[in-house]
Length: 436
Image (cartoon, rainbow, N blue to C red; front, top):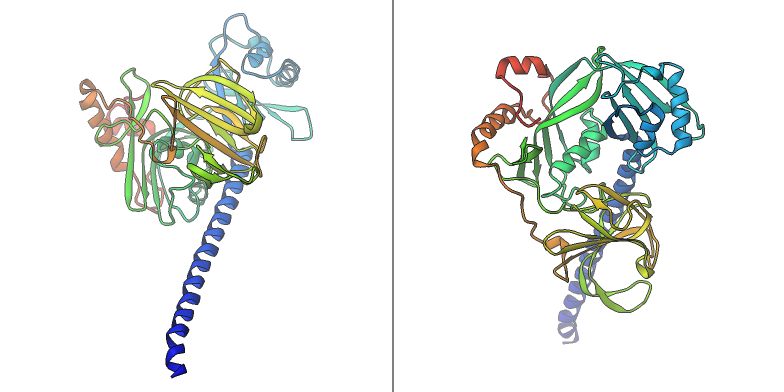
């Protein structure tokens, strides 16, 4: 009799143990996945900060010497003078000509990496720092790229887009460019899945010895995310500027990017009307999204606008407040560095600060918030309005461009043996894409 009475309780106890075990396993799996995402975030940020160089370029004005021209691109006068002295050792700067192009290259963290000046059609003057501990510079004259080839690149994501691109034999710059193209529809910190496929048709600029020196335009791209396919074709917007469109002519560009961070970072806290604050030890609204990322990770403006405030602000730490069109405002909190000033105009995707842990923060992260007509909105669920589609008057040109480049997307993992020079492409198909 006692045995019969105990049996149901025993079954319930065993069932409870099983449920607790399942819950514990899911929690362990979630913690492990978060740790993996955080590790990838650090690896991507470190690799991008050391390998990617972003150039600012302009044409030399008449009457401006080399050192002053370098200063106009944001280099401090003492450093510009040392750069000019190093350049003078290999090229007579009295022969610098107005109209030639000068560019200053920096890391994503703003560190000076290179200065280049186009001497003529065949030669480029390069000046680069000697090393992190040496304040000197090395100057040399290099042969300018002689060919531009169109190449197909493809790969499969195992953990991150950056690793997939480098596994395909390319540099992180190509990963950055792809993330920017699809950045209005995909958050490359949370959306990628193992098994996703990317395919791209890109111009590769090459030296005379055949080595790839830089990437030109991405003419077409595709990203297959968990079975959903996103495609992009390079064309021109109504004002004639290069822009990317889906095959149906809809613009990929929207009012806002899908993430305020340029590199991978997991979301550590979601939008909530009542969240337990880890420092204040009380429940209060958390009207933004926390991205866990290493100190120094670049923060970008999700949309063009003006800086309302930039600087320290109480518990928010170093904060940047932007005002956009149509009643939108965005805020970026706990920054380690602020790279803009109040009143400044910023463009979508512009680097405005670096992740930190200033103010009321238990660790390095970005607290990002968006306001629409005075009300805080959940950015994860916000529908972003698209830009204008291809104009009716340009439709036939767009169809020709789409027909030219989309068929060249390589098959996944196909050998990349279909590279041909831009001139050969032009002779076969006519004029290159009309989006220059």
